[in-house]
Image (tube, rainbow, N blue to C red; front, side, top):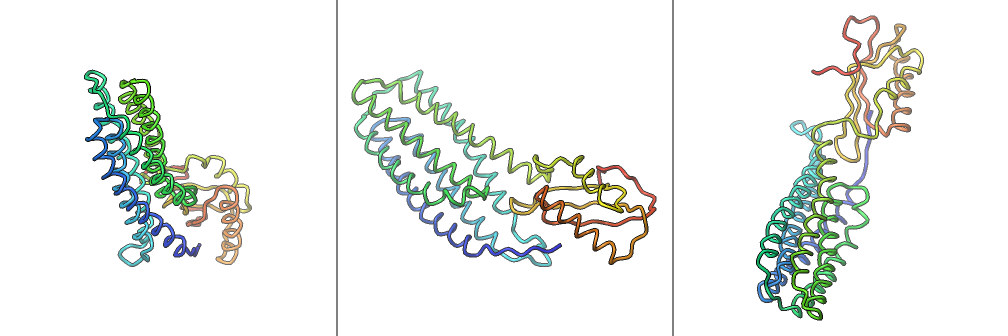
Length: 302
């Protein structure tokens, strides 16, 4: 069953938006490191660290977008279609790693509070809000249907929220001298990163491990296919996602009567339509059988 999709224009736009975001985040990171060291603000330094992880994640996402454009070949029959899933996994993992580091640093600052130059914190956080906000708008559209772009988007969106939190902290320090708000905001930012990164890690892992998509009920699928005449049963069943756009199914299918190839093709069209419309499966490979002696178990460990 063949499917042809054109992604060149979309990939070009994604790549351009990622490059713009990379340069913006390099500027933010450099300025916030200077501002954090100058002011003594851990929250601003944590925001800078998060921004640096943004730069790395955006570069990874950009490389993945470029790789995904490469054609399939004899040596790579799927091409680089999983490059963006790997990028999403790496980016989501980096969110959690950064979060753990921030939690440790926040604890240290709770134990040993430091007076902070709040005015600098306010101005540098404003820079982060503007630049990250622009990057978020650039990536928002592609984030809806692409896991790689969603991982980059989450990095940027969470960093924009972090900059807003740092701004609030700066204002509280400036006007009320509440300096413990700095490590508290750092801790909140870190916990938010863990929350956002975890779901993305789980989703990417499910695809990389070839798990059945969570929204597909294989028992119901088997029952639906078996209702198509003259199908007897579906067994030796595998369903997996190659990436977010492709869901594959391969199985042995037993018939109650001996079909010729033309008859099998007619039944196959019905099965493909059912699987696509009801289960979103767009690549189907079936091995037809009639009175063959083999295991009829639905799931068999190869």
